[in-house]
Amino acid sequence: MPVAGAIPYSAPGVAAGELVHLPAGTPITAANAAGRVVLRDFPALDRGYLAEPLLNKDMVDAGLAEAAGVVVAFPFPHEQVKGYWDPHLGTHYRVPGVFVGSDAAASLRPGTHTTIGVLAGRAPAVTRSVIATLPGLGGERIVLDTNTDGVGWVQENGTVALLALAEHFARLPLRCRPRTIEFVFATGHLHRPAEGSEFRARALDAEYDSGSVAFAFVLEHLGTREYLPAGGSLRPTGLAELSGWFAGSPALQQAAATALAARGVDRTFVLPGSDVPVPGRVPQQCSFGGIGTHFHSHLVPTMAMISGPWTLWAPSFGAAAVDHDRMRRQVLAAGDAVTALASVPRDQIAGPYPDLRRARASGAPTCAHDLPPEWAPTG
Image (tube, rainbow, N blue to C red; front, side, top):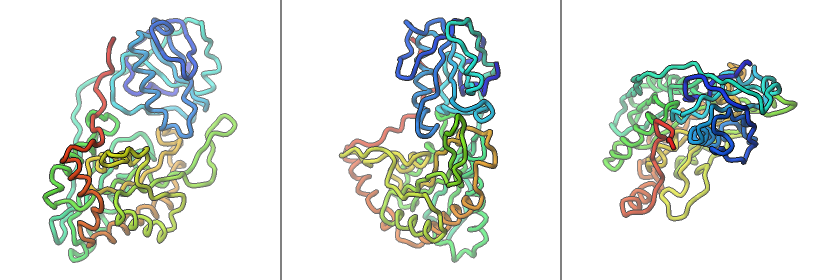
């Protein structure tokens, strides 16, 4: 049977057992899954990226239950979901797992003897983050960050934005760069135990109080088109995908709003976070929707531009997933914001962050910075 792809980090090997369908909400346990191949429907959610914690839990639970394997069935056809690449926690699972499209899933029959296999290998590897510095009049830095590993036109296109911004600012005379600009092309986002943005955020956190950092700005998933389920497949709506420009201080929020309006970037919201505020925690909202979270949660003044379309982990849509004119306007808006903030005093940019840092130093609870484990647990 054609599979859309292996579930990332599922176990290499071949196994067999009775196929059992466990509907959403039914826990995967030894009682219902041991020795069996579990058929699971892809979670019914507003956007596919929201399924990651559920997919991860299913794979972990299947390993603990000693299942033979896991098949996750999409409600979309094979051609749209081939190569789908999530969860991206980087945790190695204990069972083989595959994705199938709706056309293949229609022929699966629970109760039949089923063989599942993942042909893969594991080997140690070293990857590196690339950090480039463009000197300014002063040593205080603006840090621009993105990730370099991805599976399609959406997931890693922040690299294009950073390269374009680096070229733009490098062409300016030195007098037009009051601050030094650091460009971070971070590794490890698809193997998050080695998340490069987290390690860079830890370094900036450690040195922020010395006055060497003004703010961080993360760009990812730019120019995305909205695709929504319709008639059993994903179809373009003709609109831009909703996106967020997260900003952690009034000065950063104002710069974002002004830049978006000037460049005509619609369907984008300037937000203080994407999670539910927790009173007493510093900051009250930890999540900036993506890798901007690492910098903000380490209490470095941060902006982050991101979207989460259905095409994020579905590389089959190719270039059609991106509106390149919109992407250009987003990158121009990002450049405008950096330019507008380049000579703004550091304490004005920081807004509440210094108070949050002092509260953290006094023992206030803060965001978790634990990275995912390399290996799923065993029973």
